[in-house]
Length: 249
Ligand code: VOV
Image (cartoon, rainbow, N blue to C red; front, side):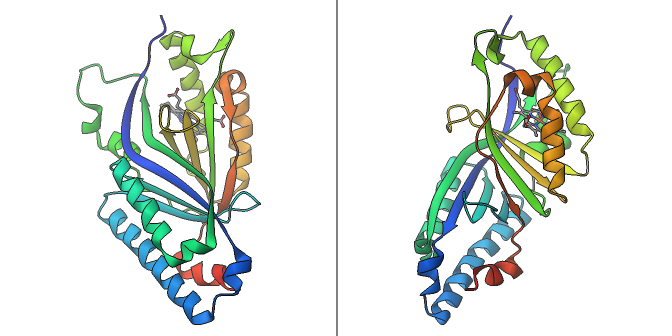
């Protein structure tokens, strides 16, 4: 029988991708540029504070390639908070020199394919809480992409029996586990929230590990047969102390 698996849902998540309008930014007088950068950094300090208080988390990375210049990823308890974050950025003067090229709304999700047998609340488990309310690692590289599970003819993930999906996800987890310490994954669900069904956000110390993991996973039945993928966005960590250099023209 086909039935939905349970999910544990944690913080809401906004991926906000911006391109910088370098031509206009270049023409801003230096002192104004400085003050706009300071405004931006004050906002990021606010994100850091919220992270320290464990009321959310953030990641700030550059994006390599034409799709964007920066990615701001924020986790918060509610969708209203995400709205506030997006507007807070839009109201900064520096936002006038950016263009939002992509964004993605989702909620951090932990598949609960095998819920506790004693009926206890899985969120009483600190490991589970850390998975759905994660503090995003500040590792060197990010890789973000949206994905679906196929619903075509015989390849329909949603008509597979639960036991089969548990089996396939177990194999997926085994492949992922080989990359422990190399890659940290945040899976956020977005069915009904955005255009795809999940957002996959990976962090790595070595960008090559993204290619190795994702390639290896393509051979797992769950990805080979059922995975459908959107655009990939990759980049490098943008530490606050490097923002000024990054924006220097
Ligand atoms: C470090 C890499 C890594 C590891 C350890 C890992 C492990 C696990 C486990 C144990 C589980 C099941 C329970 C849960 O947590 O939900 C999942 C779940 C999931 N995954 Fe995963 N995944 C990884 C990495 C990883 C990648 C790279 C991808 C993209 C696939 C690809 O081909 O590009 C992915 C996708 C997903 C998705 C979409 C789900 C939810 C599917 C659903 O139907 O609910 N994932 N994942």
